[in-house]
Length: 64
Image (cartoon, rainbow, N blue to C red; front, side, top):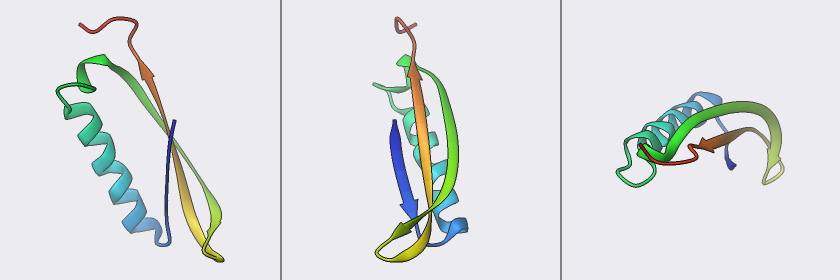
């Protein structure tokens, strides 16, 4: 699981999409990656409301 938080939803959402693309296109991680499930909720970050994204990465039992 990876957690990413940001103060602005639009900026944080773009960062999460970029991270997903980087993981999928990684020559090391990409072939072993089965699924990425993203969930979001609000949280406090430095005493300010922020958006917290949790990425649950499921790996294949063997790289294809």
